[in-house]
Image (cartoon, rainbow, N blue to C red; front, side, top):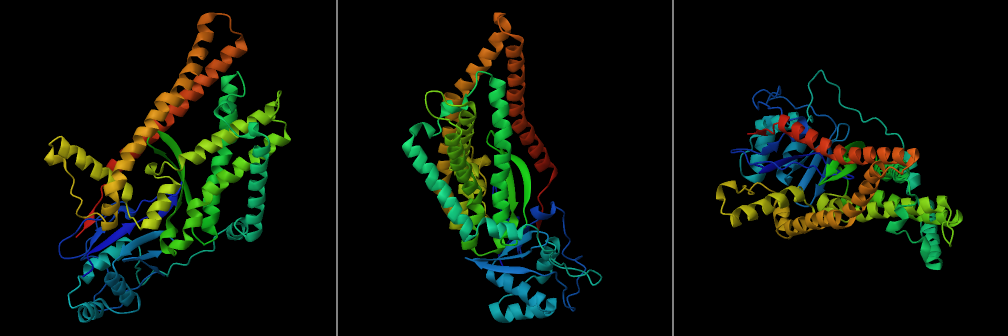
Length: 445
Protein backbone atom coordinates (compact mmCIF):
# COMPACT_ATOMS: atom_id res chain seq x y z
CA UNK A 1 0.00 0.00 0.00
CA UNK A 2 1.36 3.50 -0.72
CA UNK A 3 2.81 4.89 2.49
CA UNK A 4 2.06 8.52 1.98
CA UNK A 5 0.01 10.80 -0.24
CA UNK A 6 0.99 14.41 0.27
CA UNK A 7 -1.59 17.02 -0.63
CA UNK A 8 0.01 20.09 -2.13
CA UNK A 9 -0.78 23.50 -3.47
CA UNK A 10 2.21 23.67 -5.71
CA UNK A 11 4.88 26.26 -6.20
CA UNK A 12 4.53 29.99 -6.43
CA UNK A 13 6.32 33.31 -6.00
CA UNK A 14 6.86 35.93 -5.01
CA UNK A 15 6.83 32.14 -6.10
CA UNK A 16 5.63 30.51 -2.86
CA UNK A 17 5.94 26.85 -1.94
CA UNK A 18 3.01 25.72 0.16
CA UNK A 19 3.06 21.99 -0.19
CA UNK A 20 1.52 20.33 2.84
CA UNK A 21 3.28 17.64 4.83
CA UNK A 22 1.05 14.81 5.89
CA UNK A 23 1.10 12.52 8.86
CA UNK A 24 1.05 8.74 8.80
CA UNK A 25 -2.32 7.07 9.24
CA UNK A 26 -2.46 3.43 10.40
CA UNK A 27 -3.57 0.94 7.82
CA UNK A 28 -3.54 3.26 4.84
CA UNK A 29 -2.16 6.39 3.24
CA UNK A 30 -1.85 9.60 5.15
CA UNK A 31 -3.54 12.48 3.41
CA UNK A 32 -3.32 16.12 4.36
CA UNK A 33 -6.54 18.00 3.69
CA UNK A 34 -5.03 21.48 3.77
CA UNK A 35 -5.95 21.99 0.12
CA UNK A 36 -9.67 21.66 0.85
CA UNK A 37 -9.91 23.76 3.96
CA UNK A 38 -9.55 20.91 6.47
CA UNK A 39 -12.99 19.34 5.99
CA UNK A 40 -13.27 15.77 7.23
CA UNK A 41 -14.08 13.03 4.72
CA UNK A 42 -15.69 9.72 5.67
CA UNK A 43 -14.00 6.95 3.66
CA UNK A 44 -17.23 4.96 3.81
CA UNK A 45 -19.31 7.77 2.29
CA UNK A 46 -17.43 8.63 -0.88
CA UNK A 47 -20.45 7.90 -3.02
CA UNK A 48 -18.47 5.44 -5.17
CA UNK A 49 -19.34 1.74 -5.48
CA UNK A 50 -16.47 -0.73 -5.26
CA UNK A 51 -18.06 -2.76 -8.09
CA UNK A 52 -18.54 0.06 -10.59
CA UNK A 53 -15.91 2.08 -12.48
CA UNK A 54 -14.96 5.33 -10.79
CA UNK A 55 -15.58 8.51 -12.77
CA UNK A 56 -12.73 11.04 -12.90
CA UNK A 57 -12.09 14.53 -14.11
CA UNK A 58 -9.13 14.85 -16.53
CA UNK A 59 -5.92 14.38 -14.54
CA UNK A 60 -2.28 15.18 -15.25
CA UNK A 61 0.64 13.01 -14.13
CA UNK A 62 4.29 13.91 -13.65
CA UNK A 63 6.96 11.50 -12.43
CA UNK A 64 9.58 13.46 -10.52
CA UNK A 65 12.14 11.70 -8.37
CA UNK A 66 10.60 9.22 -5.95
CA UNK A 67 7.09 10.59 -6.32
CA UNK A 68 4.41 11.15 -8.93
CA UNK A 69 2.47 14.41 -8.99
CA UNK A 70 -1.20 13.96 -9.93
CA UNK A 71 -3.59 16.85 -10.25
CA UNK A 72 -6.41 18.78 -11.86
CA UNK A 73 -5.06 21.76 -13.75
CA UNK A 74 -8.45 23.49 -13.95
CA UNK A 75 -8.71 23.95 -10.17
CA UNK A 76 -4.99 23.77 -9.28
CA UNK A 77 -5.44 20.77 -6.97
CA UNK A 78 -2.39 18.51 -6.84
CA UNK A 79 -1.07 15.66 -4.74
CA UNK A 80 2.24 13.80 -4.60
CA UNK A 81 1.82 10.02 -4.69
CA UNK A 82 4.41 7.25 -4.35
CA UNK A 83 4.80 5.30 -7.62
CA UNK A 84 2.63 2.36 -6.51
CA UNK A 85 -0.12 4.73 -5.34
CA UNK A 86 0.00 6.57 -8.68
CA UNK A 87 -0.34 3.27 -10.51
CA UNK A 88 -3.43 2.49 -8.43
CA UNK A 89 -4.95 5.84 -9.47
CA UNK A 90 -4.13 5.13 -13.11
CA UNK A 91 -5.97 1.80 -12.93
CA UNK A 92 -8.99 3.49 -11.38
CA UNK A 93 -8.98 6.30 -13.92
CA UNK A 94 -8.62 3.75 -16.72
CA UNK A 95 -11.95 2.17 -15.81
CA UNK A 96 -11.05 -0.47 -13.24
CA UNK A 97 -13.49 -0.88 -10.36
CA UNK A 98 -12.23 -0.55 -6.82
CA UNK A 99 -12.27 -4.36 -6.44
CA UNK A 100 -10.36 -4.84 -9.71
CA UNK A 101 -7.80 -2.20 -8.77
CA UNK A 102 -7.28 -3.82 -5.36
CA UNK A 103 -6.76 -7.21 -7.02
CA UNK A 104 -4.27 -5.78 -9.53
CA UNK A 105 -2.39 -4.05 -6.73
CA UNK A 106 -2.18 -7.26 -4.73
CA UNK A 107 -0.99 -9.26 -7.76
CA UNK A 108 1.59 -6.62 -8.71
CA UNK A 109 3.00 -5.55 -5.33
CA UNK A 110 2.21 -8.55 -3.13
CA UNK A 111 0.27 -6.63 -0.50
CA UNK A 112 -3.24 -5.31 0.03
CA UNK A 113 -4.38 -1.77 -0.74
CA UNK A 114 -7.03 0.16 1.20
CA UNK A 115 -8.75 1.41 -1.94
CA UNK A 116 -11.64 2.99 -0.03
CA UNK A 117 -9.19 5.20 1.81
CA UNK A 118 -7.56 6.22 -1.46
CA UNK A 119 -10.97 6.99 -2.99
CA UNK A 120 -11.79 9.22 -0.04
CA UNK A 121 -8.56 11.12 -0.61
CA UNK A 122 -9.20 11.42 -4.35
CA UNK A 123 -12.69 12.79 -3.72
CA UNK A 124 -11.36 15.29 -1.21
CA UNK A 125 -8.84 16.52 -3.77
CA UNK A 126 -11.67 16.92 -6.30
CA UNK A 127 -10.32 14.30 -8.72
CA UNK A 128 -13.48 12.15 -8.90
CA UNK A 129 -16.95 13.08 -10.14
CA UNK A 130 -20.50 11.77 -9.94
CA UNK A 131 -22.57 10.34 -12.80
CA UNK A 132 -24.52 13.59 -13.12
CA UNK A 133 -21.36 15.72 -13.22
CA UNK A 134 -19.71 16.54 -16.55
CA UNK A 135 -15.93 16.11 -16.92
CA UNK A 136 -14.09 19.34 -16.24
CA UNK A 137 -12.87 21.28 -19.25
CA UNK A 138 -9.80 23.46 -19.01
CA UNK A 139 -10.62 26.84 -20.54
CA UNK A 140 -7.88 28.45 -22.67
CA UNK A 141 -5.81 30.94 -20.70
CA UNK A 142 -5.47 34.54 -21.72
CA UNK A 143 -2.09 36.16 -22.33
CA UNK A 144 -0.39 32.95 -23.50
CA UNK A 145 0.78 34.63 -26.71
CA UNK A 146 2.10 37.58 -24.73
CA UNK A 147 3.92 35.16 -22.44
CA UNK A 148 5.58 33.43 -25.38
CA UNK A 149 6.51 36.78 -26.94
CA UNK A 150 7.96 38.10 -23.67
CA UNK A 151 10.43 35.22 -23.54
CA UNK A 152 11.04 34.75 -27.27
CA UNK A 153 14.57 34.79 -28.78
CA UNK A 154 13.96 38.32 -30.11
CA UNK A 155 12.98 39.51 -26.63
CA UNK A 156 16.09 37.94 -25.09
CA UNK A 157 18.23 39.77 -27.68
CA UNK A 158 16.63 43.09 -26.66
CA UNK A 159 17.13 42.30 -22.96
CA UNK A 160 20.82 41.53 -23.54
CA UNK A 161 21.29 44.76 -25.52
CA UNK A 162 19.72 46.82 -22.70
CA UNK A 163 21.93 45.17 -20.07
CA UNK A 164 25.11 45.73 -22.10
CA UNK A 165 24.20 49.38 -22.66
CA UNK A 166 23.65 49.97 -18.93
CA UNK A 167 26.95 48.30 -18.01
CA UNK A 168 28.88 50.37 -20.55
CA UNK A 169 27.30 53.61 -19.28
CA UNK A 170 28.12 52.80 -15.64
CA UNK A 171 31.70 51.90 -16.58
CA UNK A 172 32.07 55.18 -18.47
CA UNK A 173 30.40 57.25 -15.75
CA UNK A 174 30.63 55.70 -12.24
CA UNK A 175 28.18 58.29 -10.89
CA UNK A 176 25.45 56.34 -12.70
CA UNK A 177 25.99 53.39 -10.37
CA UNK A 178 22.99 53.55 -7.95
CA UNK A 179 23.98 54.25 -4.33
CA UNK A 180 22.12 54.66 -1.06
CA UNK A 181 22.43 58.47 -1.03
CA UNK A 182 20.49 58.55 -4.31
CA UNK A 183 17.38 57.69 -2.29
CA UNK A 184 17.34 61.12 -0.65
CA UNK A 185 16.91 63.21 -3.79
CA UNK A 186 14.92 65.93 -1.98
CA UNK A 187 14.90 67.64 1.40
CA UNK A 188 11.14 67.06 1.53
CA UNK A 189 10.88 63.60 3.10
CA UNK A 190 7.25 63.03 2.16
CA UNK A 191 8.11 63.78 -1.49
CA UNK A 192 10.85 61.13 -1.37
CA UNK A 193 8.53 58.63 0.29
CA UNK A 194 5.61 59.27 -2.07
CA UNK A 195 7.80 59.27 -5.17
CA UNK A 196 9.36 55.95 -4.25
CA UNK A 197 5.95 54.53 -3.37
CA UNK A 198 4.38 55.65 -6.67
CA UNK A 199 7.38 54.51 -8.71
CA UNK A 200 8.11 51.21 -6.95
CA UNK A 201 4.51 49.92 -6.81
CA UNK A 202 4.17 49.38 -10.59
CA UNK A 203 7.68 47.91 -10.67
CA UNK A 204 6.66 45.35 -8.06
CA UNK A 205 3.63 44.61 -10.20
CA UNK A 206 5.93 44.15 -13.21
CA UNK A 207 7.99 41.64 -11.19
CA UNK A 208 4.85 39.59 -10.54
CA UNK A 209 3.59 40.01 -14.12
CA UNK A 210 6.81 38.44 -15.43
CA UNK A 211 6.23 35.47 -13.11
CA UNK A 212 2.68 35.15 -14.39
CA UNK A 213 3.61 35.52 -18.08
CA UNK A 214 6.34 32.90 -17.75
CA UNK A 215 3.70 30.60 -16.29
CA UNK A 216 1.05 31.48 -18.90
CA UNK A 217 3.58 30.56 -21.57
CA UNK A 218 3.33 27.03 -20.15
CA UNK A 219 -0.48 27.25 -19.81
CA UNK A 220 -0.19 27.59 -16.01
CA UNK A 221 -2.73 29.63 -14.07
CA UNK A 222 -1.62 32.27 -11.57
CA UNK A 223 -3.07 34.33 -8.73
CA UNK A 224 -1.77 37.28 -6.73
CA UNK A 225 -1.86 37.75 -2.96
CA UNK A 226 -0.27 39.95 -0.31
CA UNK A 227 1.64 38.44 2.61
CA UNK A 228 4.70 39.07 4.78
CA UNK A 229 8.14 37.58 5.39
CA UNK A 230 9.64 38.24 8.81
CA UNK A 231 8.92 42.01 9.01
CA UNK A 232 8.74 42.55 5.22
CA UNK A 233 5.53 43.14 3.29
CA UNK A 234 5.54 41.07 0.08
CA UNK A 235 3.37 40.40 -2.95
CA UNK A 236 3.20 36.80 -4.12
CA UNK A 237 2.32 35.16 -7.42
CA UNK A 238 1.04 31.62 -6.92
CA UNK A 239 1.92 29.24 -9.78
CA UNK A 240 0.53 26.02 -8.37
CA UNK A 241 0.60 24.28 -11.74
CA UNK A 242 4.41 24.29 -11.80
CA UNK A 243 4.38 21.05 -9.81
CA UNK A 244 2.88 19.31 -12.84
CA UNK A 245 5.53 20.36 -15.39
CA UNK A 246 9.05 18.93 -15.79
CA UNK A 247 11.51 20.42 -13.34
CA UNK A 248 13.74 21.99 -16.01
CA UNK A 249 10.76 24.04 -17.24
CA UNK A 250 10.08 25.49 -13.79
CA UNK A 251 13.24 27.55 -13.53
CA UNK A 252 12.25 30.39 -15.89
CA UNK A 253 8.88 31.08 -14.18
CA UNK A 254 10.69 31.08 -10.82
CA UNK A 255 13.42 33.50 -11.95
CA UNK A 256 11.27 35.64 -14.27
CA UNK A 257 10.57 38.22 -11.55
CA UNK A 258 14.27 38.76 -10.92
CA UNK A 259 14.78 39.13 -14.67
CA UNK A 260 12.20 41.94 -14.62
CA UNK A 261 14.06 43.65 -11.76
CA UNK A 262 17.37 43.49 -13.64
CA UNK A 263 15.76 44.94 -16.78
CA UNK A 264 14.15 47.76 -14.77
CA UNK A 265 17.47 48.53 -13.07
CA UNK A 266 19.26 48.72 -16.44
CA UNK A 267 16.50 50.82 -18.00
CA UNK A 268 16.60 53.33 -15.12
CA UNK A 269 20.37 53.71 -15.44
CA UNK A 270 20.05 54.39 -19.16
CA UNK A 271 17.18 56.84 -18.53
CA UNK A 272 19.17 58.63 -15.82
CA UNK A 273 21.99 59.16 -18.31
CA UNK A 274 19.57 60.51 -20.93
CA UNK A 275 17.93 62.88 -18.39
CA UNK A 276 21.26 64.24 -17.15
CA UNK A 277 21.52 62.50 -13.81
CA UNK A 278 25.31 62.87 -13.68
CA UNK A 279 27.76 65.74 -13.46
CA UNK A 280 28.17 68.57 -10.95
CA UNK A 281 24.54 69.66 -11.35
CA UNK A 282 22.47 66.53 -12.02
CA UNK A 283 18.84 67.02 -12.96
CA UNK A 284 16.09 66.13 -10.49
CA UNK A 285 14.58 63.62 -12.94
CA UNK A 286 17.93 61.87 -13.31
CA UNK A 287 18.38 61.73 -9.52
CA UNK A 288 14.89 60.28 -9.12
CA UNK A 289 15.76 57.57 -11.66
CA UNK A 290 18.88 56.66 -9.72
CA UNK A 291 16.95 56.64 -6.43
CA UNK A 292 14.35 54.27 -7.84
CA UNK A 293 17.17 52.21 -9.37
CA UNK A 294 18.77 51.79 -5.94
CA UNK A 295 15.42 50.76 -4.46
CA UNK A 296 15.12 48.19 -7.26
CA UNK A 297 18.64 46.96 -6.51
CA UNK A 298 17.82 46.43 -2.82
CA UNK A 299 14.68 44.53 -3.81
CA UNK A 300 16.78 42.37 -6.14
CA UNK A 301 19.34 41.80 -3.39
CA UNK A 302 16.54 40.83 -0.99
CA UNK A 303 15.77 37.84 -3.22
CA UNK A 304 19.05 36.27 -2.07
CA UNK A 305 17.72 36.18 1.51
CA UNK A 306 16.37 32.75 0.54
CA UNK A 307 15.65 31.87 4.16
CA UNK A 308 12.69 34.25 3.84
CA UNK A 309 11.22 31.96 1.12
CA UNK A 310 12.04 34.29 -1.76
CA UNK A 311 12.46 33.35 -5.42
CA UNK A 312 15.96 32.01 -4.73
CA UNK A 313 14.55 29.83 -1.94
CA UNK A 314 11.98 28.39 -4.35
CA UNK A 315 14.75 27.80 -6.90
CA UNK A 316 16.86 25.90 -4.34
CA UNK A 317 13.97 23.76 -3.14
CA UNK A 318 13.00 23.00 -6.73
CA UNK A 319 16.53 21.89 -7.58
CA UNK A 320 16.81 19.74 -4.44
CA UNK A 321 13.26 18.36 -4.70
CA UNK A 322 12.14 19.62 -1.28
CA UNK A 323 8.53 19.63 -0.12
CA UNK A 324 8.55 21.93 2.94
CA UNK A 325 12.17 22.75 3.67
CA UNK A 326 11.47 26.00 5.53
CA UNK A 327 8.86 24.45 7.83
CA UNK A 328 11.00 21.41 8.64
CA UNK A 329 14.06 23.62 9.21
CA UNK A 330 12.16 25.82 11.67
CA UNK A 331 10.92 22.78 13.59
CA UNK A 332 14.46 21.36 13.57
CA UNK A 333 15.82 24.63 14.94
CA UNK A 334 13.17 24.75 17.68
CA UNK A 335 13.99 21.15 18.63
CA UNK A 336 17.67 22.03 19.01
CA UNK A 337 16.84 24.98 21.24
CA UNK A 338 14.45 22.90 23.36
CA UNK A 339 17.09 20.19 23.79
CA UNK A 340 19.63 22.77 24.96
CA UNK A 341 17.08 24.13 27.45
CA UNK A 342 16.14 20.63 28.62
CA UNK A 343 12.50 21.01 27.52
CA UNK A 344 12.03 17.50 26.13
CA UNK A 345 8.24 17.80 26.21
CA UNK A 346 8.43 20.63 23.64
CA UNK A 347 10.33 18.59 21.03
CA UNK A 348 8.37 18.11 17.79
CA UNK A 349 8.16 14.71 16.09
CA UNK A 350 9.72 14.98 12.61
CA UNK A 351 9.26 11.33 11.61
CA UNK A 352 6.50 12.25 9.14
CA UNK A 353 8.57 14.92 7.36
CA UNK A 354 9.85 14.24 3.86
CA UNK A 355 13.32 12.59 3.92
CA UNK A 356 14.75 15.16 1.49
CA UNK A 357 13.60 17.97 3.79
CA UNK A 358 15.07 16.27 6.85
CA UNK A 359 18.45 15.85 5.16
CA UNK A 360 18.64 19.45 3.95
CA UNK A 361 17.26 20.90 7.21
CA UNK A 362 20.39 19.80 9.07
CA UNK A 363 22.41 22.57 7.40
CA UNK A 364 19.60 24.85 6.25
CA UNK A 365 18.38 25.40 9.83
CA UNK A 366 21.63 27.21 10.65
CA UNK A 367 21.24 29.41 7.56
CA UNK A 368 17.73 30.32 8.71
CA UNK A 369 19.10 31.45 12.08
CA UNK A 370 21.98 33.37 10.48
CA UNK A 371 19.64 34.92 7.93
CA UNK A 372 17.18 36.25 10.46
CA UNK A 373 20.09 37.62 12.51
CA UNK A 374 21.59 39.42 9.50
CA UNK A 375 18.22 40.85 8.45
CA UNK A 376 17.45 42.13 11.93
CA UNK A 377 20.97 43.52 12.40
CA UNK A 378 20.85 45.28 9.03
CA UNK A 379 17.58 46.94 9.99
CA UNK A 380 18.76 47.97 13.45
CA UNK A 381 22.20 49.27 12.51
CA UNK A 382 21.79 50.43 8.89
CA UNK A 383 18.21 51.33 8.00
CA UNK A 384 16.78 52.27 11.40
CA UNK A 385 19.26 55.11 12.08
CA UNK A 386 18.28 56.74 8.76
CA UNK A 387 14.57 56.55 9.57
CA UNK A 388 15.16 57.74 13.13
CA UNK A 389 17.07 60.73 11.81
CA UNK A 390 14.26 61.59 9.40
CA UNK A 391 11.64 61.13 12.11
CA UNK A 392 13.55 63.30 14.59
CA UNK A 393 13.98 66.06 12.02
CA UNK A 394 10.27 65.87 11.19
CA UNK A 395 9.28 66.22 14.85
CA UNK A 396 11.79 69.04 15.44
CA UNK A 397 10.08 71.08 12.75
CA UNK A 398 7.07 71.32 15.08
CA UNK A 399 9.11 72.15 18.21
CA UNK A 400 11.65 74.58 16.73
CA UNK A 401 9.00 77.06 15.64
CA UNK A 402 10.86 78.25 12.55
CA UNK A 403 9.54 75.76 10.01
CA UNK A 404 7.27 76.90 7.21
CA UNK A 405 3.76 75.56 6.74
CA UNK A 406 4.96 73.52 3.75
CA UNK A 407 7.70 71.90 5.85
CA UNK A 408 5.19 71.10 8.59
CA UNK A 409 2.83 69.52 6.06
CA UNK A 410 5.75 67.52 4.70
CA UNK A 411 6.49 66.17 8.19
CA UNK A 412 2.86 65.18 8.81
CA UNK A 413 2.57 63.31 5.52
CA UNK A 414 5.93 61.59 6.05
CA UNK A 415 5.05 60.40 9.56
CA UNK A 416 1.64 59.11 8.46
CA UNK A 417 3.18 57.19 5.54
CA UNK A 418 5.88 55.73 7.78
CA UNK A 419 3.30 54.61 10.36
CA UNK A 420 1.13 53.03 7.67
CA UNK A 421 4.04 51.12 6.13
CA UNK A 422 5.03 49.87 9.57
CA UNK A 423 1.58 48.76 10.72
CA UNK A 424 0.42 47.12 7.47
CA UNK A 425 2.74 44.06 7.72
CA UNK A 426 1.73 43.69 11.39
CA UNK A 427 -1.97 43.71 10.43
CA UNK A 428 -1.42 41.09 7.73
CA UNK A 429 0.53 38.90 10.17
CA UNK A 430 -2.30 39.05 12.72
CA UNK A 431 -4.88 38.36 10.01
CA UNK A 432 -3.00 35.29 8.73
CA UNK A 433 -2.49 34.01 12.27
CA UNK A 434 -6.23 34.24 12.97
CA UNK A 435 -7.00 32.50 9.67
CA UNK A 436 -4.62 29.62 10.47
CA UNK A 437 -6.29 29.13 13.83
CA UNK A 438 -9.71 28.93 12.20
CA UNK A 439 -8.60 26.33 9.64
CA UNK A 440 -8.07 23.05 11.46
CA UNK A 441 -5.90 20.61 9.54
CA UNK A 442 -7.49 17.14 9.35
CA UNK A 443 -5.67 13.90 8.56
CA UNK A 444 -7.80 11.24 6.86
CA UNK A 445 -7.16 7.78 8.28
